Amino acid sequence: MNKRKKFIAIILLIVGIGLLYSGYLWGRHPKVSVVMLTYQREQILPQAIDSILAQSYKDFELIIINDGSTDQTEEVIKKYKDKRIRYYKNDRNRGIAYSRNRAADLAKGEYVMIMDDDDKSLPERMEKQVSYLDKNPQITAVAGQIVGLPRIPENHNNIAVGLIQYNNFGNANIMYRKDFTENKKIRYDEHLRASEDWDFWINMLFSGAKMASISDDVLERNGISKKHYGISYEEGNIAVREKIGKKISPKDSQKFYQATPCEKLHMLSDKNIFTASFYENLLKVNCP
Image 1 (cartoon, rainbow, N blue to C red):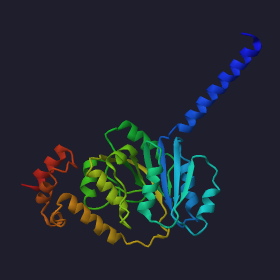
Image 2: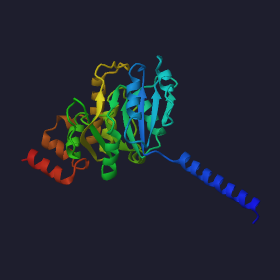
Image 3: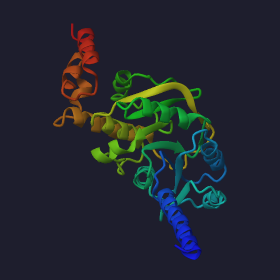
Image 4: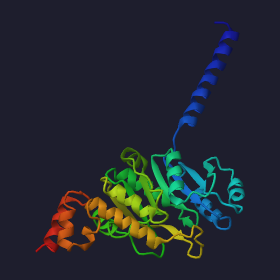
C-alpha cells in the first residue's frame, strides 16, 4: 500500500472511531432522570435548579416541565446552558399529575428522582440514593430525610403500615426504579388535583414494590413558598382513602376503615404488602 492510500486509510479509521464514539454518547442513557414540575416560580426556581446542577453525582439529566406558567419562569430556565437540562412546556396549565406523567414518560434514566421547584437538594443527595438502590436491588423506591420534618421509617414494613393510612413516605425526597412503574403501568391519577403522590406510592405498594429510606437528610424545604395550584389536600386525601378502601374491599370501600385492627389485618392477608414474618407478628399483637 502506497503512502497516500495508507494516509487515507488512517483518516477513515479515525473518522469511523469518532462516529462510533459520538453515536455511543448520543444513544447513551443517564443513570438518573431528575424530574421537576414548575409553575409560577420565577423567583425561587433557580435555587432548585442550582441544587441539582451542583450534585456530587454527575450522571443525570434534568427534565423540567413548565406547566403553563405566565410569569418569567420560562426565561429563567432558558438562561441555563447546561446540556443535561431538557426543557418542555405544557400547552396550558394541566395540573400536577399530568405533568408528572409527562416527565416520567420523557425520562431516559434507570432511576427517577423527584424534585420540586421550591425545594433544595443537598449536594450528596443523588449520590447517596443511587448508591442505596445499586446496593439493594430488592428495593423499588428509596426516600431520604427532609430537614426539620418527622423522620421517615427506614424499614419497608413500617413504611407500609403508615402508607395505608397517610403519606408517610414523601415525594420530592424520593428516587425510584423506572422499569418497575413501566412494567406495572403505574401512573399518576390525573383525576386527582391533590395527594396524587400518595396515590402513586399506594399503587406501587399494592403492586409489590418494596420501599425504604436512608437516615441522611437529602432535602431542604422552602417553608415560605406560595402554593399556586389552589388545591385542597383534604379533598385529595379523602379520594385516595376511598381508592385504598376499594383495593382492600372492592364491594365496600368503607369496610376496611370501620373494621377493628384484627379485622383489618385479615382483610390484608392476601395483599402481600408486608413481609410474612412481620405480618405474623402483627396478627399475634392485634388478634389475641
